[in-house]
Length: 149
Image (tube, rainbow, N blue to C red):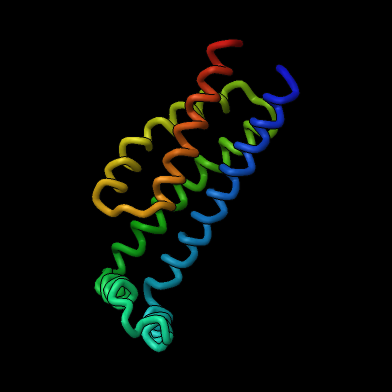
């Protein structure tokens, strides 16, 4: 494997581990909000921010957050743990140069592209477009490496 491929794989590994860490934070937050007064405190704090004046989006997000049931928070936490585990596994495997990690990353990342596109179509943000572009680039790059070797 060429040294630039190794650098690229390690960069992808760092990206995957960062995503895993982010999902771990989401899972801890979701499980932490299930049966505690933290949800009400969080909502009060968010609504007290001066940003909420004239920002209907923030108010809507807080209202949606308060409408979630404990079961929904548990589901969010569980899904975040599953995806975080996959991302962590991909990251570790790519960092250590495992061939199976290249295949896993290609298929796992490619399988999420339709969902990301659907999400962009229904709730457009430039951050989502950037994430989709990065994931498409990762799939194309890794597919070329897998096919070449």
